[in-house]
Length: 355
Ligand code: ATP
Image (cartoon, rainbow, N blue to C red):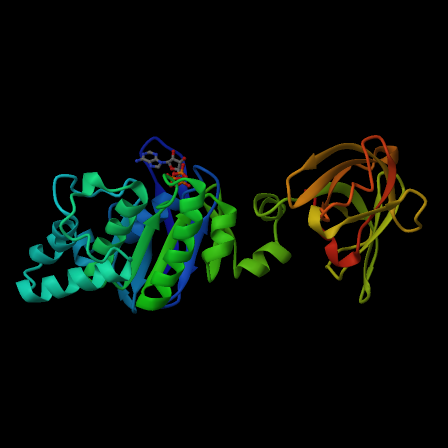
């Protein structure tokens, strides 16, 4: 599936999509990720055919599809709200679309059973939908959307109504369904963790544009924009100047005068940048440790598996969070008010040019 140079503007409104292009591979679990209002639902609705693009083209298997009404596209959508018929049974809900297409009764029966097994609801065929839990209803909605074997399944925040535990189970379940059926999934979420755990590739969106497309690991490890570093995972930013840049890496100078080294990035000496680091990539050491950034622990936040130390660096260099794993039975090595050094490995540094 491919979208080329899509523009969508609403009458009297802002531009919801500003020249968006994406190419989604067959059998891919592809996620549109971004904050509320960035345009991800609009893009999904254009692919489904519920909206028309102001400009641009949408292709499926090499054919233009923007002129086709939704029911003529081999594409189905699963919504957050399930959109099931509450008075019908599970089996009737799944069969409904197939009956409309005039598929023979015996074939419908076979597909309903197959779909219920696929979503692990075998035996629930005669149950009324309104007698099922939210998680079960979402499985029925998935079974219904998969029953007529679409080429592409669009999923608009389908898990956001579920509680955390169920959501985690359904994340694994969705990934399994996608792998087993071989159908292309286009998944919309504003939840970065959900995107990282399920997707083959992620498109990070902001204000109607796609900022970066890549595998979860590439998006997390090598964000190309400050927005992406900030939105995916946790990042802290320190203002800095590029002191030297070469084949061995880049040397930065913080506001305090302290020096930090980072991996190769293309900068000119003197450039003003934001250095970003991830809390889990840093560590704490004794205050006089050479090469560390000296500072004071302002707060610690215990979260079971680990503890996050909030460190204010000396001489106005900024603030950093450092996350350390908790060891069973071992007390914290550091307390609030302690003087410490933050160790910043070069590989943990990524810089973004300030404009
Ligand atoms: P959310 O996660 O809140 O659903 P989103 O990323 O899916 O957000 P969209 O719903 O695609 O964002 O909206 C993108 C922009 O387009 C927003 O500024 C929104 O107000 C605007 N918009 C969406 N639908 C319409 C509409 N029918 N009429 C006018 N403006 C719209």
